Amino acid sequence: MPAFPKLNSAALAQFPLTRTARFDTDVLHFTDGSEQRFRRAARASLGWSLDLSLLSEDEVARLLQFVEACAGARYAFDFQDPSSGTVHPGCRIADDLTAFQIDADLRGRGQLVIRKDAE
Image (cartoon, rainbow, N blue to C red; front, side):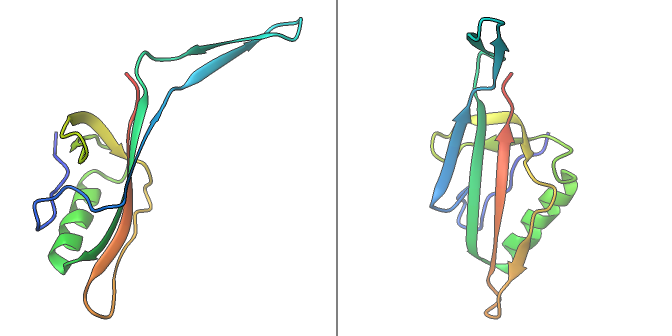
């Protein structure tokens, strides 16, 4: 399984970094109007939003090559959580339409959203 590429600075992400944890919940509605809620999985679904800026052309090329190798959201990869250092296998890019752009000063920027579904 491929690993998410590091930046030239050896960092995995830039700040601000947004990390989310979400529990998928099912709701049963009863005829008396009451309801019961329960989790679908024991663990939360995790997500990271990486806002990347001031990237070199090389970094943009590596990130685009990685997104292409993963076929957008199709193939899983290992992602190391930048805040905790924990490696999460089975992560995916959340959106197939990942856009990176190069500015006039030859600096790149873009956003990636990575998700890890609950097990």
